[in-house]
Image 1 (cartoon, one colour):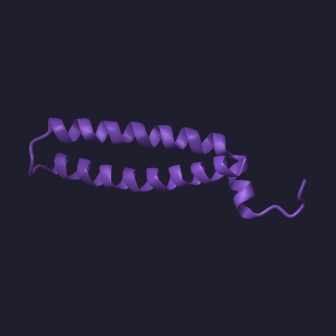
Image 2 (tube, rainbow, N blue to C red; image 1 turned 120 degrees about the vertical axis):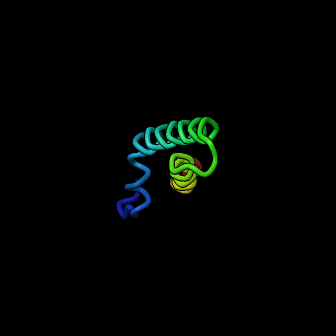
Length: 74
């Protein structure tokens, strides 16, 4: 067992928390999609939901990339 652990080893040691984070980000994306479909275009609600969806997509992609890297190492 190696004694020189890297930062990524510490991140992967809490991969369960990243799975929960990805699930919450997915839920937020689904809620944003429902709001986008349900609201009329040009309203503040529609614009905020679009921005939320973009933000969740970026954060979810990063979280998914971390999880893929963690599970491919094991």
